[in-house]
Length: 241
Length: 287
Image 1 (tube, one colour):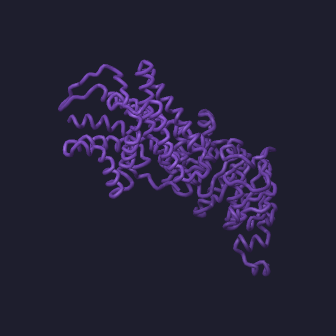
Image 2: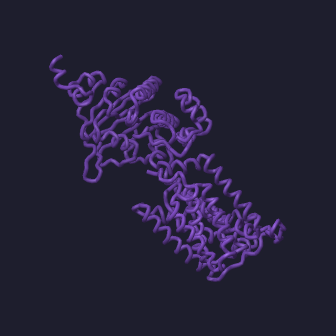
Image 3: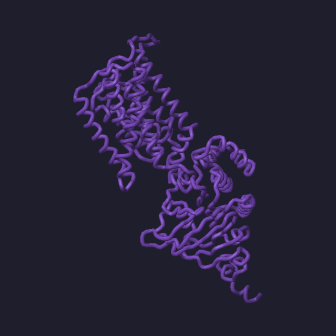
């Protein structure tokens, strides 16, 4: 469904992504893990058309999306839940959600809205509050709800665990797993490797702008290098086992 | 009381101009210093359509506003869109340049002299407690209030109005939602021009129109926007009316020659004492 072929992105002289190739098939839940500054957000932003790519190609549903503007990518059926949520803080929760369905008719939106309310009841309870007043977890739910309003085929999730309490993170991931079960394709980037790999089908490891490992989520969870670098386990443990 | 009535009339106009500033500020973060020129343009257009071509007012008014709206759209396409590096300071400087251009065009088209638009309806004075008010003034206040209310509904209820507010909150997130940020910017210039021109039409029979009117009324509207708190909708309305009242009442204690200075004294005082403006709470959210 999504194919990224040897993508290179630079910020001035700094090369953020070098020859990154990633693919996501229809219905898959793929996690891409990496530490701070590995280029995770850059990858998603580049798919979405927020940052331009220097080289390489992104193909979505057999069409190149490399030179698309943000709103055109959104119209193609790609939705991004950006890093740090980025809800419209001066608008109410309801207005935020409706904004996600900007390009859809109001009838389509009111149907989808009910669906989203039943998935995230908290959004219904707080629909008239300003989004800036919500807690981090609620804002994350709102950002996901907003992204779902445009009925995406591919959901890009940028660091959903950022700044959230462990229980809330679990809640967010449960929702994502449920969405994935309904057939939604998800590409998620995350520092929290344990969480990201636990719920995903497949994974990639990004380091300094390069893909260094890939495999099924189980394989990656069992990989010694991943354990050491991302799951906080020492070499010692590995030797002892 | 008489000062109250005349203050309200002037204040309604300032409020509309201040709203024009806010529309553009709220979507792009820019101050459009050509906003006053749209007011002048509204006055000149109604002069052309109503006084020269003799169209009925009921047709000439919307036509003038729509023409100004189109000029606003072109204004964005030419002056804002073509600027390569869209930093705020570049764009604001461009709006100042554009305002001078518009003023000079107006001077060539309509001449240097003040033009008289004539009355939109037979003038009657209405006795009110403590003074008289002309039906012209009542029309200015009533239509001004209507425009402000329609604008409020547009921003709160309509999809495009919400998109404009979303762009102000977070341009990138708005793009993610499928909103074309450039389209919203074009639209905001169009709407702001239309609101400014409507103000220009309303005030034209009372103050007449001169090609360089835009400068002063633009700056006073800006003062009103600052007074109410830049970016706040009802702040602009309140700031405009307050400024109108201040000007009007100041005439009782000061020589009327100082009338124009009031607006600038207000800007200074606000910036010294309460930089966010009287009703500007939502400022500084923009990242």
